[in-house]
Image 1: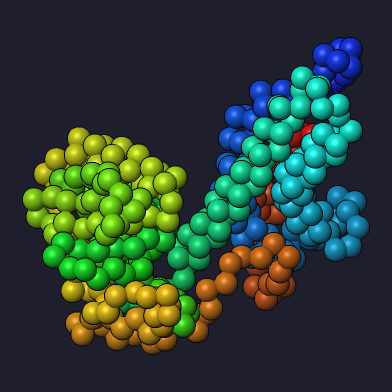
Image 2: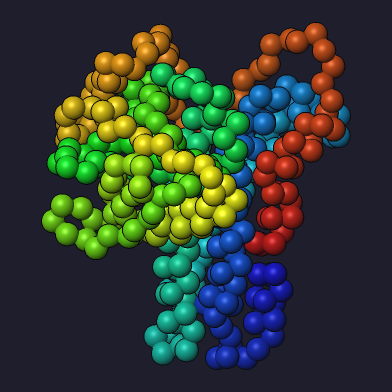
Length: 342
């Protein structure tokens, strides 16, 4: 795709070549590819981490050098390396370009576009790493069926919550599932997560709020049977994502589940003190009625593509083909993806 466009560009006279224009024209497609890849990357890394020994042996059987797992891990990282390289190459091209060249403005726009895309990709990866961590670790005080029975996580982010009639704002992690909005808080010393409640989407109303001195980038959750909740997001883009996803899901659940009555996320589950820069990650104590559970020892560390642990022998034969399919399902095909972006 990109290679073909650039090759066509080089056939033109030098004064008519538009390298920056080629990148700008392909930017929407490249953005969709990269964001989808970044969203699936943590799951692919998780597969490699859990089955590193079997996959490494399989790659070595196919002719890869020892350790065979490196073929897969380096392949997963190549798209990110290429993304970081584009602005540098474009900057070098601009340095050798005449000031009056007609492609110069597009070169500069392309550099900015790639820098913005790189920042978006990092944000998506961090969010998906955290999402995977939440879905696979124990949650303190959890109520109801296993979290995985709620379905696919449609969106999640870290926000500030303020209940009606209160001036206190508390840091929370919101996870949107097809029929419910899950609220979690960070445990003391960021060693795990604490369950704060579920809010069924049926019967809820989402309203985007204007910025004022009390809140910025905020929306309101309300309904006949719930207390009004104000959610402040990190930025305008995060706000728009939440509003769009919630409008879509509340409309869908109202059509498919018209008889389900919403239940409130009780504000008394929130800490009694507001979050300040010095206290927002300090000891967050659950409400008195919250069941006491043992401390989670696992630290909140993101998945690292460079860390792969050997599996303990299980005494059973693994199906390598099944692992291949699982890996491919969790992440777009690296060769295809890389060749597309070359």
